[in-house]
Length: 164
Image 1 (cartoon, rainbow, N blue to C red):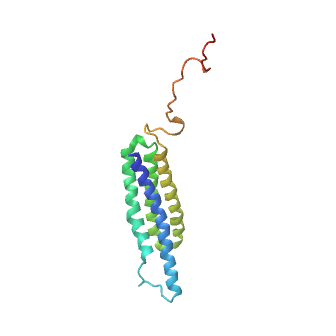
Image 2 (image 1 turned 30 degrees about the horizontal axis):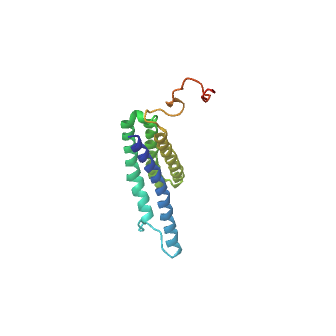
Image 3 (image 1 turned 135 degrees about the horizontal axis):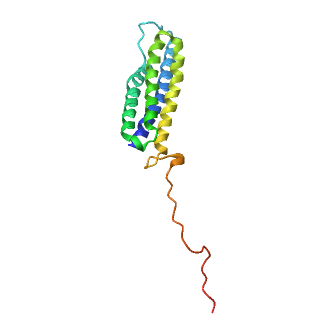
């Protein structure tokens, strides 16, 4: 389960990267078309970049956030702090969706949408690192169990054969 937690949180971080690339492509495509004489009005349909951004942001990433939360509940002790970070990631994803809808009516809020995307990315990476750092016993950091070899008894001096 620890590996599943790591993979799902990593997919969320990757999803944010895809979001940034898709929206950049989408708007540069719009600017390119405007430079070539196209008119931007209410009859214009979204392009491929905007479609990927919308589908990924409204369906894929929120579903991955829910999956991460469910996995965190099952993973329990194998990822210390995993439930908390899964909840933070999902909360930021839900905030991201809300900010997107508000931004259509108040475009300045789109600034917060962009900044929150960085928070989603950072927390998803943090969640992934939690699972990577966790040991099989569920302990990390200062509380990690360390197996120390048994000390041998006797001398550390090499034994030499007696002279005759």
